[in-house]
Image (cartoon, rainbow, N blue to C red):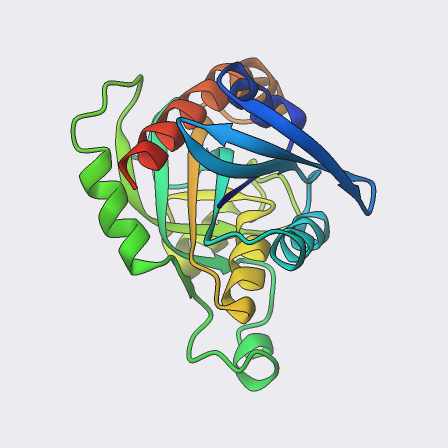
Length: 226
């Protein structure tokens, strides 16, 4: 079974176009939709925005369903200036941009660095499965960062200087964190809604639906190739 976690309902909505639902399980005010996508057993939901909501959803998913891997699908803001709106980032590693560097290395889960690595096998399979995909925008593999704030100008340069990521969002790090401590393979697929040149909530809202559809297409192509 494959787990798919989206932050918002608009990010999950495109998946229902192909989803064959078998049941819906409600836990902690969340709705886990169980069924099939492209012939694969899937459980999917939207968790709500922010790190804690994402962590709650991921831990319940792992505890309740026999997921072999978790995919965080949806949208993100671009940090790297080479990215444009509707490009898609596939994670190779994820970090929190708003957590002290020693918090996760000196305390649970005693990591060797601040970065949660995406599953190497999933990353390799994504490169293979998506080699010939035709979609709006380009595909990039690289680093994502997560924090509680929607990034416009404030804090952007500090994030660049510290992490040099491709994208930023408010959930991926938490889902990667939960998967790490549970030893469940993880990868994220996020399409870009806003950039440094086209920033702000107005661009996020304007582009969210189309970016979500692109993220869905990329995710389904990846799932089909597993």
